[in-house]
Length: 191
Image 1 (cartoon, rainbow, N blue to C red):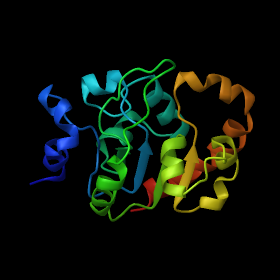
Image 2 (tube, one colour; image 1 turned 90 degrees about the horizontal axis):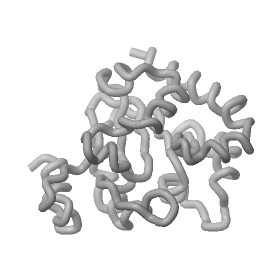
Image 3 (cartoon, rainbow, N blue to C red; image 1 turned 90 degrees about the vertical axis):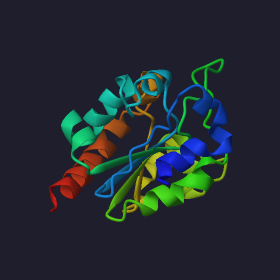
């Protein structure tokens, strides 16, 4: 049984499977870069394509890569902290369900042995992978990205909801993104 089928058959995902929804992730064996985000949004859940929305457009711009490189090259893996859209909250979407990453990420990452960089998108993946205390803010984590280098690169979620954060933290686009783009390009151009 494939990991896709195992995840789909997991009792914790039964409600989604009954609705005919598939788990959403991309884990090609050839992936050099893995992006770990929070959970699919509603549009992504409906289309079944990761980052198929305004957040994805911005993310690809931040990475300095085309849609073709992102989706068709086999160089990019995408694993969310939850494989399904968690639903609406008062402000934005509900957080990813707990326990999903613990159960499935190690198996998915093992399928991508060529990965050279893991980009942690948003606070959920950053707290999980970097073992951060709840008192550490996402802004602090991203400012101190070099502490997690070269294995991890933490970034803010590219959602339009974070436009205020971006305007308050111009150093991110000025200083951090060029470093990320440079590293991504180096990895993708290496044969």
